[in-house]
Length: 487
Image (cartoon, rainbow, N blue to C red; front, side, top):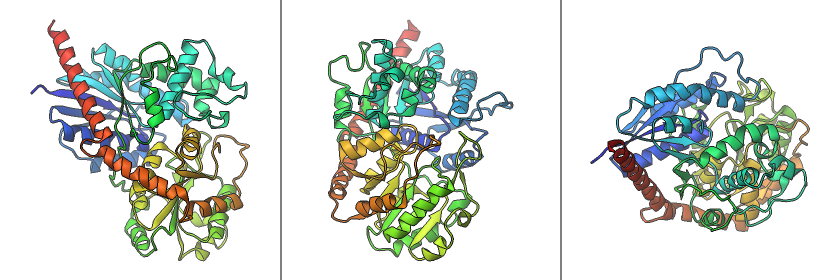
């Protein structure tokens, strides 16, 4: 049996890397022809994230999955240190020569598997004469949005940032409802982000031989069907094959100092009634200033519900990365921890999937990162939306308006806006009350999606078949490359 080797390059963002490594595990379990070499980047500006990545890799030990560390640049003094996303793109560009060096020495090299930020590596794959495959770690709807915008820009000569200024809602082929401008990702509508950043990435998406999306057919039926409709909605150039293979989730335990008390936290959860605890978590980069922290604390306390709150410290610099607090007491209202000692826990980091899958947890106040959305759906836990950045506002709109599995704290909160109004305690309390209402119809609806997600991943399910088809497609492309080399 002919061997098929893939190189995987993923940005050093925990939410992306956990999904990618879990995908690698599943693919290797399905086909013993495959081997995967994961090339690991580290961001020097994110030592906390680097520690978590090292722990993740240590806990992901799979046959035919190899790891190689890419070098850390020695001098980044002239790099973008005011915006971590800019620093990341410079890091990815820096690694191209090193990825080429490593990949060129891999026997039976059959292709590159990249996440949505690492598209600079398409050039490297083409130099080596192998195809590229994209692992899209966000929703099919977001993929459709950026592909549609790219076709408007490149084929219809319409500048997206200028279109936004009209103030009109957007009709997008992957959404059933018109999309308000207020929920469009800033990275797609602000010229400095779109024209020199995201647009270049999306153009590279079309150069891939296939796109796998971490979603499932019964969740994003409308968006997925839009890719197969014969129209010019996504432009005249042919789209690569698109495979919905999710939900791909990881239960790997990330061991850090703040997780030493996880057993105590889980023991506390074991003592709580079913569906009685609200879980608040805003992702690894989600953090609020002290005035907003106080509003959350007051809203939680006034709601009367038990809670687990993952509270992180804002970046030291504008555009930087969130960190863990050494002591939560200093940022919370006086006496809050004492008053809620028996009903709530404030923590710095938790194994999110373990928390959401616990029967005591009845609601999730979330930033609506796609990985968190999938985890909540799989666990059948309804969401209260509070997006912060990236495409999260779009995800929140989709959850509330398109899918009907979430309540709204906010749809368009923008963490990057220095003038963003505080979300007041009364609004937070109202959102939690609605979220935790046992008679809320969305609770039944998300349970139905939870069952559909399970069926999708079972043998014969839509995602199981899609991943099998994708693996077969990789192998057939490898055979074609091999034949071309012989010629």
